[in-house]
Image 1 (cartoon, rainbow, N blue to C red):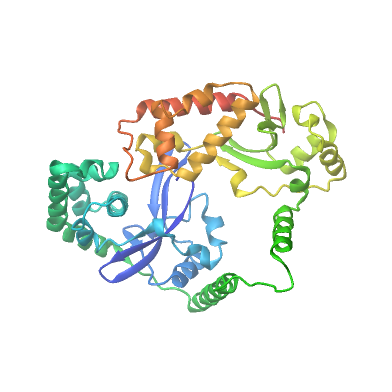
Image 2: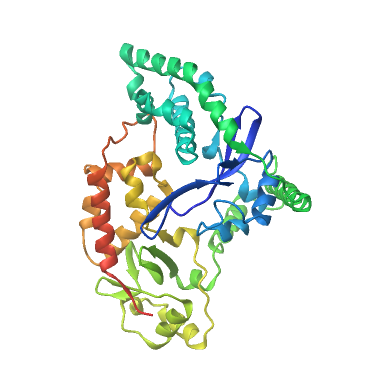
Length: 417
C-alpha cells in the first residue's frame, strides 16, 4: 500500500472513531508509516464529517508531510468513509476469537490483530508491542483456516482465544490512551455533513427498489438501448482512438506515455521493446506532433493523435486503472502478502507483463507463474482467500525476484523529454 493514505474506522471503548492511516511509504532512502495525529497522540473523530473537516483545515499533524496530503485534502467528504476492509472492531476481538474458526472469522481476526500491532509499533505503545512479541502463536491466523483443522487445530484456536482473553484488555487500554480528538472548525463540519447528506441522497436515487420498465419498449429494443449505452461509455478523444495515456511512477520519477492493444498485443509509445516516457504533457505533445518513428505509428488512429498534437488540442486524463506505482512494492513483499496493496501489485504486474510482451520477452510470464515462489506470492496477494494456504516467509527471494523484474522494465523505459 505504498504511497496511499487510507481512511479507517476503529472500534474502541468510547465507540467507533474515524482516522487516517498511511501505510509505509518511502522518501529517498527513508521509509515511514504513520497515522493521523501529532507527536504522541493518534487523532480519532466520532464522525466522518469531523474527520473531513479536520483534514481540510489543519496542516499541523504527522501526515502533513506525506506526498499525498494535498490530494487527500481535496477529497470529497464521502471519500473519507472507510470501506469494510478498513473497519476494525478492536473491542470485539475477544468475542471474535471465541467463535468457531470459519474463514470469515479468521480473516477478520487477522485484520484486527494486524492493525492493532501496527498502531502499537508506530505509536510505540509498550503494552501492545509486548503482547504481540510475547505471543508469536498469534501469527497462526495469517494462513487462513489451515492451522485450525483437526484436533490439534482446534486446540491451537482455543489457545489463541485464551491468550487474547487474558491480554487484550491491556492492548485496548493502551490504544484508548493514545487516541485523542482535537477541536474541529464547526463551519467546516457543517459543510462536510451537507456533502455526506447529498452523496447519500444521490446514492439512494441511483439505486431504485425495482427495475423501471417502459411498457412501450419491448425487451429486445431495451437490450439494444443498453448496448448503445455501453458502447458510448468512453466518448473521450482517447476512447475514440483506442489509445490510453498511462502514468508510471518509479524510484527515478514520474513518466507519462501511451499504450494501446492490437488484439491481445500491447503496443507502447516506443520502439523495439523500448518504451518512451515523458516528464510533462507538453513534452509528450511535442514528440507526438513531430515524430512517427515509433511502433505506435502503425496504429490506424495514430494520424488523429498526431493531428491533435500538432494543434495542441490534446489532454491527458489518465484513468486510475492506467496509473502504475512501482516504488515500495519490493519492500512490502518482505513483510508478506497481507502487507501488500493487492490492487497496486495487480496493476504493477500488468504493466511489467505488458512491457515484456511488447519487447517479445517471456521473462515476466515465467517469473509470475503460480508454480514459482514469486508467482504464488503475487497470485495470493492479488486474490487473497482465507481457505488457501498462504505463502510462508521469509520472502527475501520473492522480493529480489520482483526487484529484478522491475529493474529489467526500468532499463527499457527511456525518458525522452
